[in-house]
Each structure stands twice: as C-alpha cells, then as structure tokens.
Image (tube, rainbow, N blue to C red):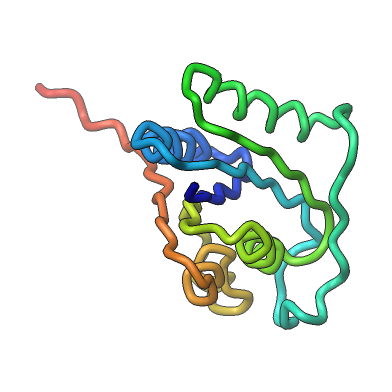
Length: 152
C-alpha cells in the first residue's frame, strides 16, 4: 500500500491539500497520514541539531480536534487515515523525518507566498521539503482569488 504524507497547518491552503489527498485516495491503494507540526520555528540550523520533537499524546488539544475533523472528511472512503501531531523542532525537519519513518511515496504540501526577504533569509518549509525529500513532492499553491471588477 502506498503512503501519502499530508502536512497541514490549518491555513487557507489546507482544504486544497485535502482535496488533492482525497483525489489520490479515490484511486485506491493509498494510505494517508495527516501531520501537523506545532514548531519552534525554522532557521539556519541543520535538521540533525534541531531540538528533539515530541509527539503530543491525548485527545484534548484543539489541534487534535482539528486533525480529527480533517480525518473525518475521509469517512465516506475506504482510505486508511492516520493523524499525527508533533511539537517542537523545525517544521521541515519533522516533515522530512516523518516521511522517512513512514516510507512515504508522496508528500502533498502547501505552497505559501511569504515575503521574498523572509524566504531568502530563512528559506521556506516547502522549498526545504522539495529539495530534501527522498520521495516525490506535490506542491499545492495557495491561490488567492482576486475579485474581478464588475462589468460596466
């Protein structure tokens, strides 16, 4: 069975990630892992020296609730879905480590349009994952819809 890792941050791109994951799930033979990393941030440090991440146990946090709601959206399909919430460390390092731990075939990740200067100084989670993952990565852009002017 193929495994797809879907890192979610509950931003406006999350519904698009879920739609892509569901499209793969409809093909059959896929297992989905929904991952949220409540992180300390990114930075220049290499993944190997980032603080140790901790899997957050329990079902009480609002983040667990959000993940359960995303998982519930797969209820109509026969797709196996697992959720995981990790706290600490670098977001990109945790995503990459999890993808290797579960032997992911694909990562479906959102692309955010952050400020250019910030991306140049610190990089972005998406670009780090794209450049370092050992599996294929599907980037779903965060499309901002601009209303068109009314016809005269």
